[in-house]
Length: 300
Image 1 (tube, one colour):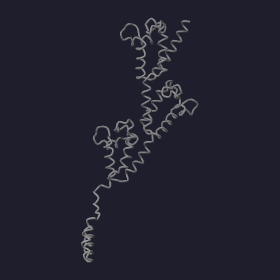
Image 2 (cartoon, one colour; image 1 turned 120 degrees about the vertical axis):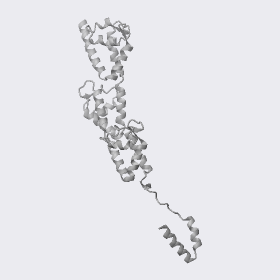
Image 3 (cartoon, helix red, strand yellow; image 1 turned 120 degrees about the horizontal axis):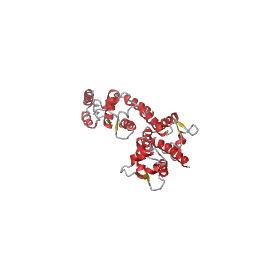
Image 4 (cartoon, one colour; image 1 turned 90 degrees about the horizontal axis):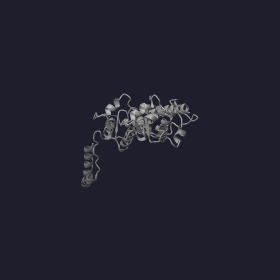
């Protein structure tokens, strides 16, 4: 077409005697290069930005890569992840993620827009892993196992009581349904908030709270009748005559076999116990309180 246009212009100018002006004008003429094959199917800057925003929201642990578990909400059978993970190293980088969508756009330019709409909607729903994590946390916080949470049980995460007030719509108790509903609303406001809270809560569960440490120490002080700062076998006989509970506990703590256990050894044991089994502390305190109370009645 350009050749035909040139020919027509050339002969028209020659006929009018304006050939020189025509040829001079060619130097200033804007000539458009033909579009390279596939150039129109490249991701735009805006599309790349939106795709990477989705990537960031899926990458809940902020590792810079996506695992198969991160993609659960989009990919229950793992086929999508297999396509994304071109390096086959078990994770998807930003580059691999963008590369997949570049290829997708080349096949179907409208697919990117459709995916972004779908992704934004899907990201607002809790994944199976998040729901399981929330319910597992509920179970660990519910130390008395009655199926509901009270303000005291939530205290280790919520000293101010503000979180409890947001959750509580049932006369001072929170059941599993209410607990899940709270986190579903949290996910709507911030897709990463549920994972961040679960990570924070797990760390809290593995530490003795101020109240727990105080109560564990009170048991130690009750056994340490001579106030020496150490528990001895003879002191234990007053509370645990057959040695079934306290005796066995102390023997496991008495590393140097001198028949004594310091407050430091005692607390370290319960700190480790909390990591292994968060509910064990409450079981111990409940049993110890009952045993100490019985002992006072027997000795009165």
